[in-house]
Image (cartoon, rainbow, N blue to C red; front, side, top):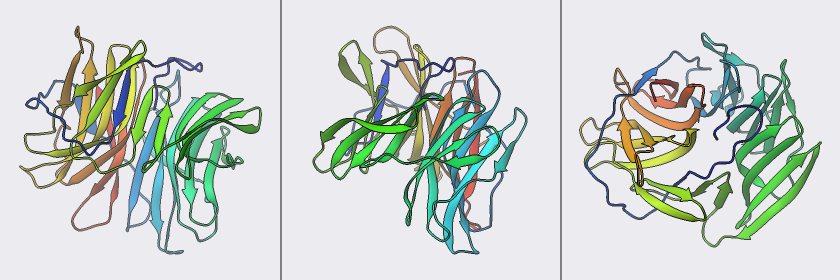
Length: 324
């Protein structure tokens, strides 16, 4: 998710999050005072439910989350969308790409309550692009030659997606109902996504990396680990403002033996600024993975993902942040 102060897109010059095989030197963990708490979130079925991204509708208390659940009736994963109405989260009927294929939604973004977009993938139908019009989800044509991984909704007539085509990074624009490829770049041995100041490359990470862009150059920031000796990975980034940025993911905790949410906040504090990790209060108590984050200058702060209780299938995870 990207910073939004209204329907118009705000250009970010601030931050990037990348997965990397290199081990980045980090300082001892610094836990700050911002509060994250888990809020109730619905599930579908008993086998598995997960959320992968979240977006706040600008100028409102409404938020959307997307992901998937396992449908035992068709023995396949199917799409799932949830909406926060200012009080609670509930499931909203969603579309699938095929009758029996594995379907999931990976990204969501919105400019209004009648212009919410989600992208994903179906093993039979391929790329999924869906749009919520205020009443229901509808199918939109997908960009040719682009398997999208990033989504930016600019307005009701303009949407951008970033992904890959084979081994090439690809960016496409939807304008007044038509998709056009705007950028491609060959990428050897990896998929590279460049989007609104965010760069992420696929891979297995042992230590998280954040990059900050100032002017025309990038600089790396030392991300504090979740705890000493942990291995961690960042999955998503969102800016509250030019002086506050959040990145979320997970780390393997040596002390609990669980996967714990990794919630990292960058704040401007002169020079390179300050990075600090934040805890969930009270502790979740089971393995938990954070996959998506959304932040607005009005103070809305959400993170979604899933938990892995030992006695049941994966369950949805929604965290709400305050004071950050």
